[in-house]
Length: 318
Image (tube, rainbow, N blue to C red; front, top):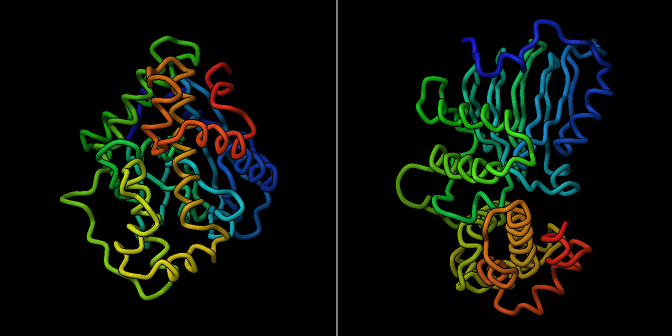
């Protein structure tokens, strides 16, 4: 399948690059993703190219290595703050996350959560895709927010066509363009609809293992992040465990329930402040704080400065 709208992103010839150099570039723009070569090859035919367009980071990843993997330890060292919307341009790539594996072909789209382990298999064959970096908490802040990650949208799926058209349009839009923020918001809305889980909320069953409970706790926090009822006690009741058990589960990751919820809300507020700075009307700083789950503006300002080493006003004025 030839994707004419992305013709400039599919050159006939790619310059070879050392595997280490290619891997360093990938980590510098996508985070801790670890590449593994194919057989004895030490050279990669491809490249990693970052574009900042319409306030959105889009990374082109072209390669013929064996695989790229992101594990639990990588997430602990480099917490994932994005959903990656992948648009396959050339070749094949097998994407695995949450035990689901899909083979994506040219024109296909798939959503990957950077806060969860994932693997991308190339098996030494050339593959070329675009990875659109969407702020994780911002995408989760509105309904529907129960996404099916690692679900493939086929090239002929109308939602896949719409996503490709939006990505192509954004690639043609300079960061300073006055309509950039509107295009970005439209892409977030379409992505929410395209990957929304079918039916009502996923039934969450209590897990016996701490790792399983922790995974469900993260899902519940993401889905109810701005709700006033989201408290450690509500979370424990929802999971069917005691507060002590829940605190012990979170302590294995080096945090507490309260700090985890606060951190997620701070990241959401920061993303909304960045959108405000880009011209998207999100109300005042106080409005953003309250809509992100905080009910004390002084407390919000203190926590924000401690977390990001700058004030909310600094973000808006940047």
